[in-house]
Image 1 (cartoon, protein in one colour):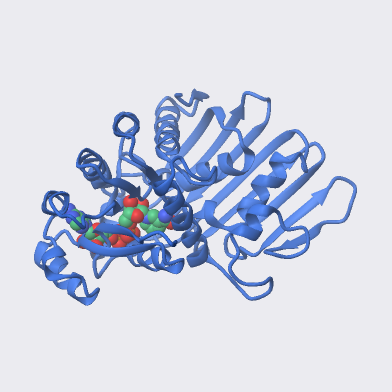
Image 2 (image 1 turned 120 degrees about the horizontal axis):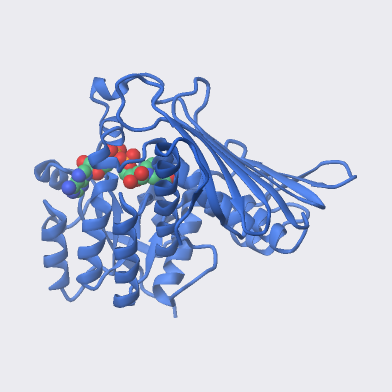
Length: 377
Ligand code: NAD
């Protein structure tokens, strides 16, 4: 018999939001979730109004997340999980309250604004036994999963170098001064955390490197800059990394480089071969065995690995993309919520701690004059 849909309550993701609508589409794609409640906006009245457009029952359109958690906890048909799609500074208090109220959590990155908060939250996840899913989108792409499986299977040999770039241009001018909501909170350390680009796109890059390589660096050296004058967080970062195995890595993260949209890429090399993937051409993975011609591997095509096949919805050459990748995270989240811990692919609270440890190490390295710095365990 098919299992009932998992009931979601969303915090954030109101009518002006960027990522909330993506979560709602992704959650529906495989029909395992149902959005039944929400506190969608910083303005309670606007949030309730927006809930109407989603056809939620009026009594489940809440003004604040506190109201939602209290009222839902008392219902027979209560929500199962809370989806957190607010600016960063709210992830910690909302997640903490949701876990304590007995709900699973599906949360946006970065998990919190500080490493201390991240550790506290990870401990609470353990203590409550609830599932915590961190939506690092890019781990949902079939060709990223294929790259991870190929690296694990030894196709590139012993790891030598991982290079990840996440380059954008939407903060290339002081758009925060024009009132752009997403830009305002992202450039305010009290709302975004001390990291700017390193928190916003750098944590995705770090997570992607770890996901594909299957190992994490122990040390890094960072040079951070605020290239738009007057900005109080970094908007451009160059980071070198060292691995215990002797491998090396580099992350370039920037939000101020003209011509870049969501230019995320990973190149990973071992002693026997290399793999290369670009987010803006997500269906392609380039593979080279040392001494042989480069091969173009396509999603769900010849040579596809088990995870790439499982993560594909339509045959090769019918395009899939960002929304399907996000839906793969939701599909795995459904499994994780029903029988923890779920798939190896699903980013969790420990990945959230690693992301904040990366941000903390970048800040410490940069402030100390760009020196090699340990990434805390
Ligand atoms: P946004 O500014 O576009 O939207 C934030 C939403 O949260 C708005 O609707 C706002 O009204 C609402 N909100 C603010 N305070 C609230 C409160 N107290 N109660 C309820 N709602 C409240 O932000 P965004 O770009 O959608 O980013 C949201 C989060 O998602 C951030 O943490 C960001 O880092 C992350 N994000 C992740 C990805 C990804 O690829 N996984 C992409 C974009 C954003």
